Length: 514
Ligand code: GLA
Image (cartoon, rainbow, N blue to C red; front, side, top):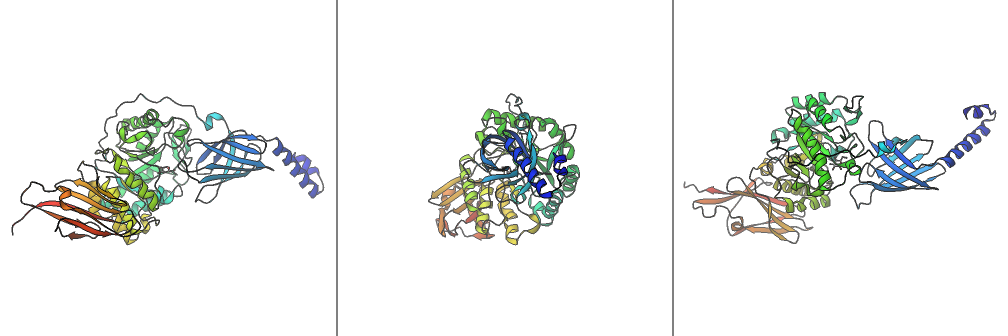
């Protein structure tokens, strides 16, 4: 073909001929089959296409198998496929000029810059790997870790997959310099975006942005912190980075050799292999749970399957130390409120070492007001939720620091009493939540989910503190105002701002005669 074009003396004629040769290539190309979209040092996505004339239909593989649709016209391919939790309106768009079985393509994900990658034809087995057997279900022994809810930082909420080794080191530095380490935050968790493919021995490796995970772990440990990493029971993570499918034991050994202390294990492309039934979910999570118990290193096991199969009933049996109870949080009131207040129904399930995880904190990311972030922190503390900061620790405002490092609120989260939070009253959009604490004490949260300031109150005797214990008296402290609250009259009432909270610690103390 090249010889023909070069032999033509007129450049103009050559151009026409070249274009026409391409025309016939377009006409002949049938895009039906399996395709892989890959980004250098980024993730991959698999597309199963069916071409009918100019129309493209098919399935976006890798996740739950989302339907895709598009067109191929004059060699221009355009594909759209849904993005995010089921029922949402967001789409991912692929655009390319078709050239044989491998060509440049652009992907546009919602809220992210366009990504340049390559679309290439692949085998069915690469796109849809065959299902491997899962272990028989059993109750794995407790690994003895995280007797109180884990605290730390995770890269995802702020950075998604656009971060690198230097960013993580700076977060470790900032965790120490800001005082967060001393406030109890321990785990620096590298979420999606660190992995590449596998080496010739099948070992998972970091990508160019994470060239030496062992060195990174050493750095984090030298700061007196622990390090977490992220993988999936499927072949890829949600953004298409390498997952642990078929390499569970090998990856657990690799993580242990690097000095990893915490694994977040995200269902993602396992949707394309297993069914989202309890049997498959539990089997897939147990598989990695067993692998982690075999390595000679304590590794916190953070299960991330969005609450599917009512994971709170069996997450501990699969070896989990914490399990996500919801789809992803976003940095806005509606998302945080919806997730946070829905947790009350399952608040009785956590036990020491086995925690409900309503997702990471958004405090400091800028999408909510100070009152809303105080509600977020208060609610997570009452729920005994893991406190995984998700903001940029290098540039925290004083208000953000005052929320994340409020030691009284953290103490509620970490309190060892086994009783769950309960609603003392719910009136419209005003909720009073109570959680018993160690000693004769309770935490009381007065939450205003409404749009106007509201008077919210409760009776002291409804707390059932110090009852039948002569010689005791109640004391109360406002944990956001850092001030004692007089315990007089029958009860307590406060003006709680829109989307805000008043959080009290009330305790019965032995009465002292002066
Ligand atoms: C899922 C998880 C998130 C995050 C992303 C990474 O959506 O729920 O917390 O790990 O994957 O793609």
